[in-house]
Image (cartoon, one colour):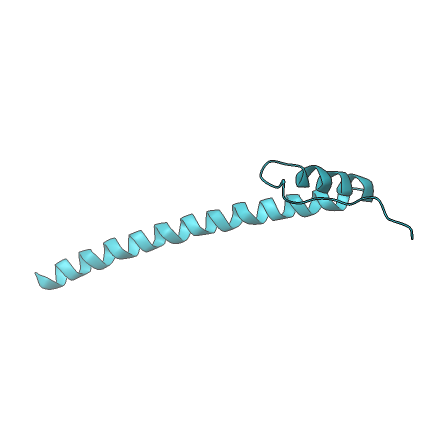
Length: 75
């Protein structure tokens, strides 16, 4: 009877482990899709669009402590 309980416990553990692996593979696949899409978007941008996006990000909420100095002082 003890072997049956051990077998059942092992089967439950194995099933749980297989489920967790499946979930992690799904998360990894989703993450890779996001990274690929981001890289594709960056590759399709020209320099000015990229700069504008970065400037807009800097002006976003919670980043008010970052100040840009776009004027070069001569002298």
